[in-house]
Length: 196
Image (tube, rainbow, N blue to C red; front, side, top):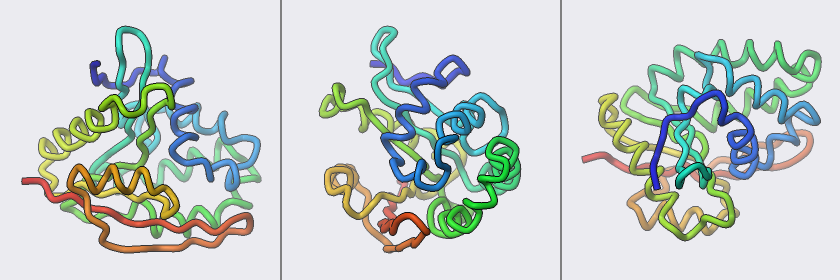
């Protein structure tokens, strides 16, 4: 298995894996979710860009992906990401703005010392093979190179398997948050791992 930086041609796998990791996104963005994610992925300098994604691959087969970035990237690209979402979603963006603002206040909030794992997903067929660990280790390596002291992530409270996985590789729960949108209630744990 190899961990490789994403290229634009990985767009279809990105969209599929992203929706595995964040199944609530269609509740916010509606029927334009896949198109929007695809357009964001292939566009440089936004928080969903291929520039921030690595894929686990075996030969030519994609096993999983991770989307992550540091504090500096978050600050630099946050506004542009919102602008691109508006450009892609049009009027739907205004219907989604309140849930997006709530989500952004809780999920993805990071400090100068943090490196953020936004999304990680493995195709069902390749779970339990160490793919997730390899992707996390790649994120930790990138975090160290960026000078980050912590790796953080948000995980849905109901996702017990993921929480156990993160605990087993050194992450610890630090906070709990709930976001209410017009379509759903989302509850998350913020988890953190200090880098040595």
